[in-house]
Image (cartoon, rainbow, N blue to C red; front, top):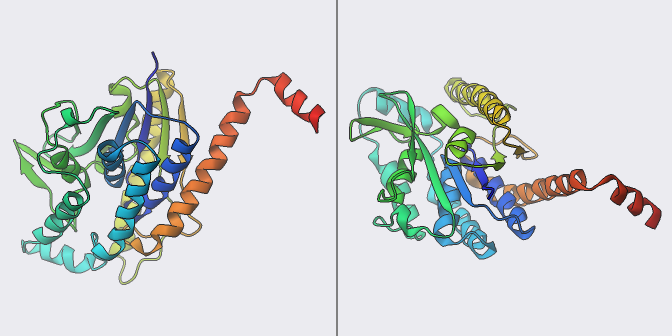
Length: 292
């Protein structure tokens, strides 16, 4: 039997595009066997895996994104946060704020991967000590919330944290569009919801924000090229949906959430139509023309 994987990339506030994309996929009856997420993609994948991989789950996810507009999960004062980290001042409050937000939206701290039955869930983090990805979900006894928090821990907002000899941070450092982890879990068909946007977003203040953004994009672009090549070498098809909003959005700017959800929905609907057209046999196209 085949195994269809939804692969969800990181991308901060642009993750709202994935919400619309997931709605379009599920409306079309495209149901995953496996969901693999990095960073904000891990947030979206986790919510659906816990709440239900269906349209009601997407509705609940949309409600959570609406709440995130006011929650200030990634404050825009990244320069101040960076300075605090350089002088070893604590900024654990953002970590706690995010953790409490996910708990308040249905992810209990004692919820384990073994409690998920509808779909396989894999969350990608980075171990800075080994330079390797850490895949939460291999061990079903792991707590889902621990994996999620490891996957979204991105300086300067949240510092890397020690756990069992690993120094954990955002999975986007090693696999922002986690195609390779999906292959490790046996995916035979992949739909990748890619948030990488090489357009320059509006970044206030001095050049640190632009440098951070460009650095993340450069690393992500190179990773994606390598992981897509790996899938091709293994003859695993990847249907990559490039989720580009109408305007570039900074990682921390959640004020465009609802319009991004709608844009993601429309972009993915168009992709699904294109996939269907590509699968049609030549005689169906000829017959359709005759009918017109």
